[in-house]
Every structure is written in C-alpha cells, then in structure tokens.
Image (cartoon, rainbow, N blue to C red; front, top):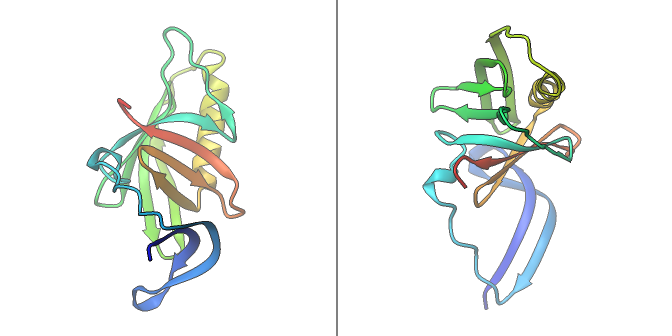
Length: 153
C-alpha cells in the first residue's frame, strides 16, 4: 500500500534524516509531482509576497523585494528600493544569510518600512521550505519570516 507523509526534520551525518514531527499523513496517496525547475532554491528569482505574516501591498511605481541565490554561496537581493548581496550558507544546521554592501538610495514611504522589515527578516532566517513555486523562510523558532514566490508565477 502507498503512504504519503510530510515531515519536519533535519539532515544528520551520513545522509540520514532525523524526524522531529509528522505534519501530514495520507494513506493510499502518492507524492506530489516534483517542483518545476523554475522553483529550485538556487538560480530562481524569488519575489516577496509576505513579511512576518503580513501580505505585501505594492503600489504603482513600487517594486517587490526579491532574492536570488547562486550555486557558489552568494545571493543578490533588492528591497524594492535598494540592492544588496552577500553570502549564504546552506548545511544540515539550516540556511543563513550574511548581508554585504548595499546601495544607499533614500526610499520613500512605505518602501522604507518594507526595506527595514525585509532586511531584518532575511537576517533572522534559519530554514527554508519549498512547495511548488512558493518559498517559506523561517527563523530558529519556526516562525515564518518571509514567503516568496518564483518570479513570473
């Protein structure tokens, strides 16, 4: 019989997975189809939908914050006003961002507040979860800090 379940866990040594809890269990169900290539963590431009559980509303002339990770441990981001980049680490202990230099344009309201919240949330990230074309970035307590979608979706 088939059994589909979703777990929360982490990778430990020798490629093993340590299960912390089972999130969902469905008898006689199949695994969902793999996410399309455009929704891979690396190489996809992700645009922010929510920061700390609050849906972003972007007015005319404003841009959404974006994030893109490359294969070499570097990331580039836009707050919707300023651009910055830096390094990221993805390992069994989680995902961490270390921001580097940033442009220093004056951001009009409400872009200035969105910028501060985006930078704070990104700095607190410890884990990532992808479901189809949605990327959730959470802090060490499991709180959802950023919800992003693959650009163009």
